[in-house]
Image (tube, rainbow, N blue to C red; front, side, top):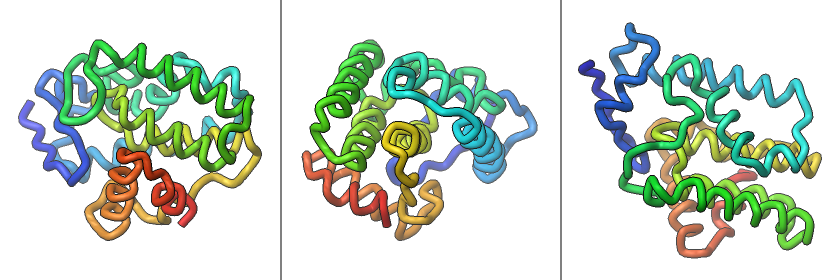
Length: 198
């Protein structure tokens, strides 16, 4: 197909078969792809605002997949499908379903037992799901939206600001975000919690 997608730090490369899943054949640049994806993501955000999602729905594989599908279904044929290739980050492709099930169970327990504050439950969930890296593309945006859904729909609190910047673009905001994720990888969740509300 010839679609060249230069990587920003922290992004994963799509393989050629995944690129073939692009539904809008006229897209030829990263900027065009970003615009199409952003329009689709905005539709998914509107969908989340129009209905109330309960914890019993949110902490399910079906919801996780459906949310990704709604975010990218107008752009990628494989939207909502677990990745079939290994990437430079994330669990092995064969471990996605099991790792996600463990996270969903943990999320329910954190909520029921009030293991952490509401912000920390949502941010920990976000960090773990992006670390699993369920999908070929869009994992960061998906993880941030699901954290927003958890904090807003389960805990009736304001969604996160995530630094108030476009985290897909190279710059100070993305650098702070990636540094906070790396700290969370080392079990220090505080920088990511602070960044989420900055």
